[in-house]
Structure formats: C-alpha cells, structure tokens
Image (cartoon, rainbow, N blue to C red; front, top):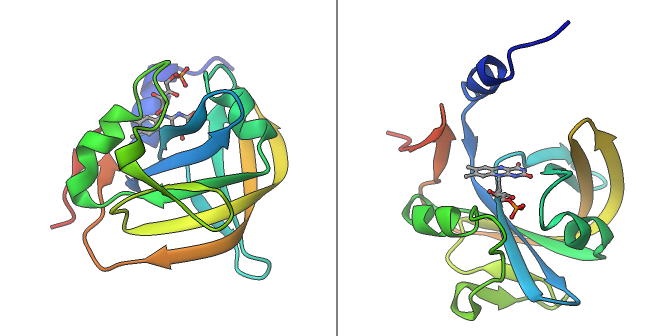
Length: 157
Ligand SMILES: Cc1cc2nc3c(=O)[nH]c(=O)nc-3n(C[C@H](O)[C@H](O)[C@H](O)COP(=O)(O)O)c2cc1C
C-alpha cells in the first residue's frame, strides 16, 4: 500500500515531543550536534534510551560509529539552539554552547536534562537507524521544556 508521506508526517506531528540536541566528539570534526525529537526512554534497569537518525544525515557516520554520545533536553528558552543544530551540513558545536563531561562527551549548556550515553545497539528502521544507548551519567534542573508539536515550537501552558 502506498501511503501519502506528507499526510503521514502531519499525523505523526500530532504527537507532542520535547526537543534534544544529540552530541558526540567526532574524530575528524570535534564536537558535533544535531537537533532531534525522536528521543525516548526504553528501560530503567539497565538504563537504556533510544533515538533515530536519518540514513542520509551528514552526522550518520559519526553517531553510528562513536563509543559515546550525549543527549541534552532543551529548555523553552533554547529554541535558537534547536534551530542552530537543525541546519544541514553545519553541525560543528560552537565551543560556547557545550561543556565536556568526565566521559569526554560534549553536552549542551543550560539544558533541562542531560544523559551521557555509551552506544550499545544499532537497528535498521527503514530510512532511519535506531540508536540505543546505555546511560552512564545524567543530570537535570527545574524548568520548562521546549515542546515540538504539529511542525512548530509550543509552550506547555
Ligand atoms: C524539531 C526537530 C526534530 C528533528 N528530529 C530529528 C530526528 O529525530 N532524527 C533525525 O535524523 N533528524 C531530525 N531532525 C533533523 C536534523 O536536526 C537536521 O535538520 C538534519 O540532520 C540536517 O541534515 P544533515 O544531517 O544532513 O546535515 C530534526 C529537526 C528538528 C527541527
């Protein structure tokens, strides 16, 4: 059956999500970052999370071959950062935007929550790959999240 991809995208967009920036320390480019809303919790014990990356992404090889990567859940005030790291072919992290944790993983400053992960599994999923990571460290602060819904940013209230 052939589905209408645009209609499917719009329908999937009715599922409100947070927004994350995925980061890793790439051998060639240093810290790179990419905006993602496919993040999801998987398991508490062991602590596993997942996200998915488009097979054609410029960041594909970096995120599918790295040992470790970071997930930074954006605060409502970080919409500009979300747009910044959603730009095509422009993923080098500005040094002022990140801190590097004890595992050598870059994480976005001012995020509501961070997860420092070790890549544990890769699964093909159509035009994306699903990346599963084990959480090695995490932190969070109080605040309002950046919300993505129906193709745009929304406020919780
Ligand atoms: C709110 C939002 C969520 C996104 N979520 C994902 C995602 O889950 N997976 C993905 O591969 N790209 C996602 N993208 C697209 C990437 O951020 C980025 O635009 C894309 O990777 C650019 O192409 P490039 O990687 O070839 O440079 C998202 C973009 C936005 C604005």
